[in-house]
Image 1 (spheres, rainbow, N blue to C red):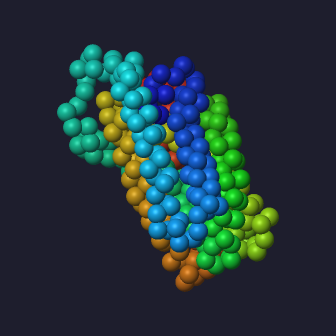
Image 2: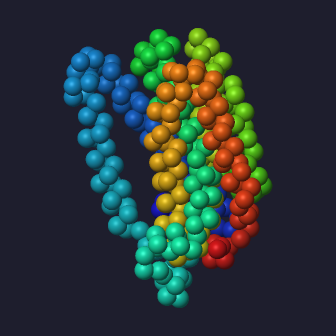
Image 3: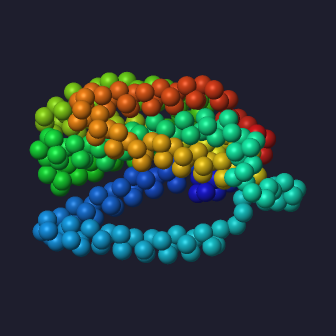
Length: 295
């Protein structure tokens, strides 16, 4: 919804640039979350942290919920969607319309977002678990390495948005997906390198690629659907990719790593990236089209 608000108010030729600002919430949120847990680890014992301390960041986040609710209540409809209302082109149940009339784009959009979610959770959740259980890192030490790498995540988001506006969504995300597939082949030697330099390089490359793929992702997903179902279609693709990518990735990766080694986890990422690449090839370029004309 935030991406749609940004892109539907963006000037011509800058939709990806405007659409990347909500995406910056991910690295900023990760820095706040990781920093909070790191800070708690400094002042609390292990027993206190797991007994009650871990709840503190979640309770504190209620302030952000209230702030976010206030902003949402003040938001007006975008000009593009207001035009749809004026023309009485709204649909009664958008989700049914998406499944009935835009099933192909729903499937392709889910696949396009798949590599993004798999990559993020492998480089964050899985790598933290693997680092602390298999590589001998303390939680605090590994979190510090991740927080350093998150800066590259944030830095690469605006870079990819600029590239997507200049060279197109398909070319930009296609090349990034190919780079993610190649990165998966080198995951094992980097993560299992046995030293901070190697692990940090793994995290920086992984989260840098995450920023590159995440920057224009919201924009391309929103451009797959017409205005009257754009919010629902983009949300469904994003969340379905989260189900098949994010929610399963840590468990699949841990099972693969335990039974077949870390190389198998890298192949898992490469396969996800190739699925995304193929899905991108089956879509059309939307960079120069007006949002009201997209179908």
